[in-house]
Amino acid sequence: MITAALILGFSLVAMLQFFVSYCRSIIAASTAQPLSEQVREVTGIRDGQLRGEEFLRLLQLTSLCPDSGVDHGAIRAVRAYFRMVSFARTALRGVIPGIVSWTEAELTGCAHFAAVALDRRISYSRNLMAQQYSRTS
Amino acid sequence: MLSPLDYAIWILISALELGVLFCALRTRSFLRFFPLNFYMLVAVISDLARFIILKHYGFNSSNYRYSYYYSDALLTICLFFALMSLYSKVFKEMGAAIYVRIGAVVVLVLTAAVCFLMVRHSQHRLATRFASELSQNLHFVGAVLTYVLWSAVKKLHETRTRLIQFTLALGVYFSAFAASFALEVLYPNSPYSAFATYAMGLWLPLAWSYTFLKIPENARLQTARIATGGH
Image (cartoon, rainbow over all chains, first blue to last red; front, side):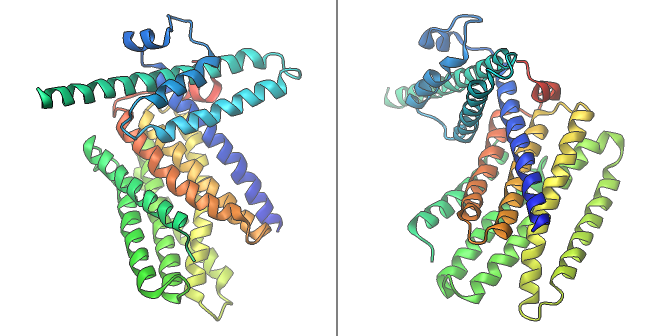
């Protein structure tokens, strides 16, 4: 029983750590990609003005676009990470004042990831439409 | 008895596993990450074999039970070697790939020996209990080894994004299963076990497909950004 409890404790801590690192790796990979002009137009985002609270709005826009079906898992993972960080900010704001700036940076990363996902889907939709148009004409 | 939802999730998992192979072929990464793709191939074949046995003999038959436990043990061994291939990639430049291979075999033999010691007194269904025990223990060993690999990746400043994401996705998978098995011991018949099986069955193919398709082979990432933050 004690061994099982120790294994459970280790596994849960490791799982959380792996999951957080995985989400951060996805977000970090997306921050290397600049946002296209078309996504800036659609969302009204200007340079350096992307904020964490825009994440959910960007995800809503993303869900409106047809997709190639590959980024569902990554979007779900980042959404879960976004909720975790938002919860940590709300719960620990009074205890650790410095957490607010850290969480804002994390949430902004999440929003950038959502904007990149939206960008990809817009490009995918345009390609689909172009293919459709070339078939009909 | 399996419900329609169970069947739907089963089919979805198999489709996603096939999707990983498709993504790897499409991005010409099939041979570069062959052990990972081989695991997915074995998983698809195993799903198919289990389904045929289920249709022929039924859910409560011993044939289905045996096929389930043996294929599960085989899959876990394949995944263990997939993890070892990630070790080889990380330690290749240090010329330690051969030691990794030897170490992998030693760990596998030791785990099998411990499992045999644990079940050797079982007169009834010794082989099945051994297969089940091996699978469970390898998941925990896999979680520990992935944790060690992740620490090495950070320490060695490994920057290959694909390698980092494959490792982390595998870490989530192994540790979720290890937690599930431990919870099963503490709270028998807990619903978490079935949930973890389905959730992780979906997780690994989704995560690997995404990495194959969206992360280019030459993409680089500083592990310090993942470990300490700052975008």
